Length: 178
Image (cartoon, rainbow, N blue to C red; front, side, top):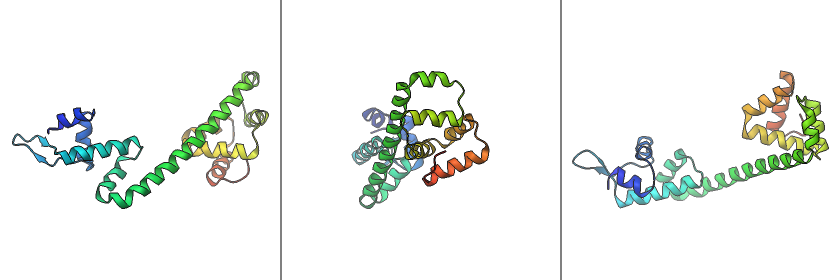
């Protein structure tokens, strides 16, 4: 089958398949006399597997590796992906809890305007955050979006050395809140 036929069959763009070929994830089995790429039923099955791995969130570089040693590498890749998903879920739940807490204290939030570090920590404490919660929040923020974490700490008016120390504690998981 041609690249266009394979793309339609899997609801992908032709350019996606060209990209897969270019990076070595899915190469055509051959060429037709007119030079068009030719894909076999084995290529079709391979693309079905690639799509499954993509739906699971595996990066293309890892999928390419799975093509060469699937039995050994698949379990490890899926275990890593599961751990990453668990970390993302944990971070999202912390953010969700914080939003709910802040919305429950809407009047406090509306009064803050421009907020400094002490007011921010006081607001979180009023919402029930402990030292461990604050550290977990910083750690999750640092892990999920380090650049935005940096900007947020700058917004709070912290000097560069305090920002550096807070981020280092977050990266290390130390017990002292920002």
